[in-house]
Amino acid sequence: LESWVLREVNLTVVEMGPRMVPRMLGEKAGGLLQSWCEAKGVTVHTNTQVKAIESTPDELQVVLENGETCPADVVIVSTGVKPRLHYLEGCDIDIDQGIVVDVHMQTNQPDVYAAGDCAQGLDFSTGKTAVHAVQPTATEHGRIAAANMVGNNNLPYKGSLNMNILDTLGLVTCSFGAWEGVAGGDSAEMYNPDNHQYVNLQFKDDVLVGANSVGYHEHLGVLRGLIETQIPLGEWKDRLKDSPVNLVDAYQGVNQAALQNG
Image (cartoon, rainbow, N blue to C red; front, side):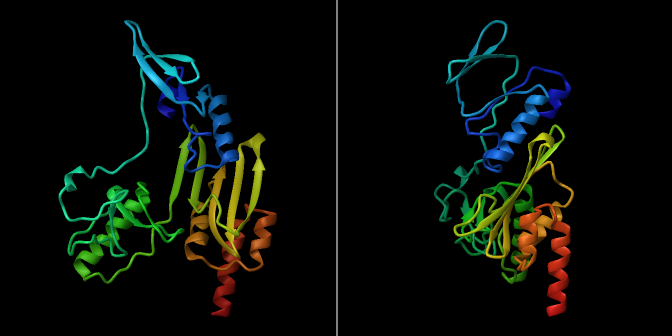
């Protein structure tokens, strides 16, 4: 996206979902990303699908389902990630959305392991299995699989924290864990649309379980750490509900309390 904008082309983005990158951003976050892109000269269509791509002697015509036609010199299609598993047809290896693996990254066949975008491994937040298809998960998968292949399955996997961090024309957006919330949980929110800033924190009891942010990226490591350690926040939960950007103080406070009590 950025390379095309830097070349000052007339850029149009068509998103079939209700907002930009709906699999990682909620309504407010996605809306901020869209308004940011539009302010940079990008035309954005949401809730819209491409019905056809027609060719003329001079250009391509992208026909949208709403009847609008967008002339184009170049069309880039990006429709998600799906593991290529056809080569395993006829093998005795369990396949669902991806290659099903246990907590050691081993398949149902002894001494056969899978890792990365093809593997359906444990999700840290849900306790179920999923294909995350993101670089941090692939890196963790590879490390766990390698250790267990040489170490007789002595390193169980705690699960991958689903996360995405995007820099779109200078605006950083991110999602961590159960960013859409959990049953019986509650949340905290900071929304500053004039400055394209947004932070949403999701809690289960007094544990931080997920987050969405836009335009706030100084302490993403702290945010990830609070979620992955599942450390009880205690009084810091109320403080974060009052000021969701107060993450560093919360991280230091709960860890100091844990050391004192330990």
